[in-house]
Image: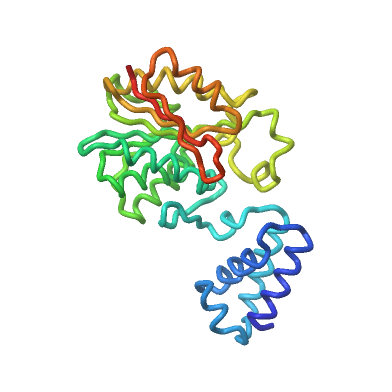
Length: 275
């Protein structure tokens, strides 16, 4: 079995099961089985696979056909140009969340203290720390997620302090200049309609915000007012159709409320200043 033949067969299997981007997925899985970069596949198409590589590749294909996300098979996901380790203990970082980071970067000043609430893999906190040099803290209710986040921070040499906490409960009043969060915002009623990759493999504690999907916002927004300093900033990633209700939660006690849209034109980030 050559690399070229293995790619063709893997792509066909994935296509028949309607897996998205089947050729790319086959390339990523075969590269992982060979412990090589994808470019190697094109430079050595006639190379024969070892028995061990073929066994690994077959197992990875089977896992993907069962619905397991490619990122959980390889244990890797790129975010803001850096590679992060991911496991089923953490949500897979999405490109859309980079808009939250971008919005934060434009608002962080030298010497600011920043908090990432619900850090998961640590992608937001680590990226902000490396891009700005700010004093960055991050919380998560999941200790398993925090272990992955801390591992990513060590690997990327990011000075982030991680704490196990429910939202911001472990911090004193007026601790931060900016708080960013990608909270759980999927309504529990959407569970049956989710893609199987999300529904069956990603951590529910990081996905579901309650029956309406707004419950975490309802708790987080007033709590952040307590731990933000005067004129502090809050940045929230938005779920589908959540702009209006979340904006309504801010209008009575926050100023400079603004919306950032993603590349598809959808409202992705809501920013506000504490009054």
